Each structure stands twice: as structure tokens, then as C-alpha cells.
Length: 172
Image (cartoon, rainbow, N blue to C red; front, side, top):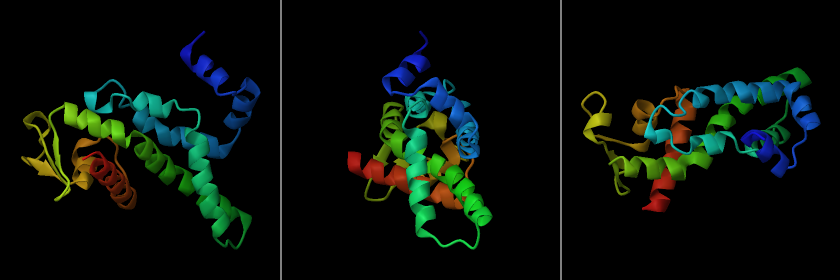
């Protein structure tokens, strides 16, 4: 039995439930939002453990819980506007939720690769092989901008940089 099927059975996910999700435009948007992360797997030790986050059967539910909380708290003129907002939030909160779940492992990976973190300055000292544009240190935002392999909109990048900084401060 393959690993994904075994994880689905352990999580109580049936094939019927999965087939229904595949018809859900929000789930399709979620899967499309995960694609840039799938492309990172196995390419660099920075991403070690990311596969566990991406395969977590609760990832979609976690994203949708956040999205639905936001949508339920906002006023919309019509259902179409509400659904457009929901789709946009799914994209943004897929990124944020993945980083929230992966940040502690990412920090450990960075430390294992020779990065060091100064929490007083939110400054990462970068090993030579990872230096970009001759920068020997970066903020957490800079790590997301220059080192991390996903291109984000500015507001999402800022939020993800904050998630990384907060997790680094917790671990230091």
C-alpha cells in the first residue's frame, strides 16, 4: 500500500471524500497554490521535511478554517464577490499556513547548514555558498526574498518573513 493511501486511511479520509474535494474549485486552487513547493522537494537541504507539511492531511482544512473565519467576518455585496475573495484568500493562506507549519523545521535546516541567527537584530549570517548579491547577512524577510525558492507578492512575503522571524525568536 502506498504511503499516501496509508496516511489517508489513518486520517479517516475516504476515496469518496477525496473525489468530492477534486470537484471543489477551492481545493483545486489550494492544490495549484502548493505546486511551487512541490517543485522544491529534493532540490536543497533547506527544504528537508517540507514534504511532511505538504502531505499533511489537515493542511487544506487548516487553510479553509482561516479563510472561512475571515470571510464570515466580512460583509460582501453579493455571493460572486464573496467567492472571489475566498479564492484569493485560499492562495495567500496556503502560503502562510505552509510556512507556519514548516518554519521550525526550516530554521533547524538553516542552522544545520551553517546559518546563524541574531534575534536582537533579526539578522541571519549566511554561509558563503548561500550568499546572494554578496550579502553576508539577511533579515528573515531577506531569507524569504533571496534564499527561499518561492516567489510571493510583497504582502505575503512580509507575512511569511514575520512567521520565520517569530519562529526563530522562539527557538533562540
